[in-house]
Image (cartoon, rainbow, N blue to C red):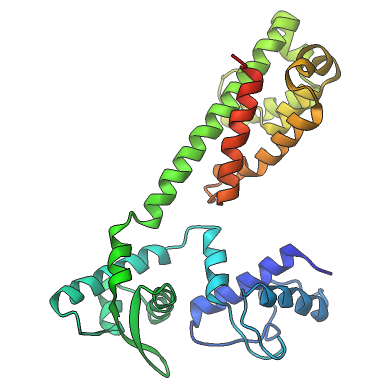
Length: 303
């Protein structure tokens, strides 16, 4: 009955509605936008209750009544991908900072800010709301939303830091470099050990037919004449290591147990996929990548 995938869909539902109507509430059962209509409403409600318990949706007497995503829920969604709102928020802060330097007591009409940074009404309202949640601005509010705002000391200090996009760029560039070195070194290690065992026929005798077929398809797709081993992915590397003759003769003395190296490669695979598709890594994934890189390279190059 509990499903993390369904919970993510529900949270995305509320996030999408918040983007369009930052001050409005909605019932989860008004319409199943993005949800499978075949799913029993009770199942949806149980999974939504998990989001409420985790502070990602506002608690209501029942989820059949109107509710909305919380500050924590918004941050969770935005931590998984880049949103242009991050840039909009900095632009808004910079405009407010200019006004602050001219007169630190003045509040600025949010409609004037929207015109200057070319944002729609929902865009300016939801980003003013988030800056307010983050404690970076002070606001004055009317029934229809925010009327005016001004930057505070926390907002000024926030502007002095590297942008979130710049911070993400540094982290992802470093993660890509670590992944590239790990894949390159592991491929080169496997290639050298297979050549040492099988000579010129290392690719045919040391690699399973399934892996060879996959690599042939990839080479056709990219129309490149690089060495076959350079087209292998983590699942392919696992199969090369686990191949009966290879494991006993070549890799058991290095990795000791299959469970250890196979588990590492399996855990690295989703991290590699995230990097390949330009998705952000979380702190746990960044640490795991660094730890596994050091661990695997120490095993294949002990000196």
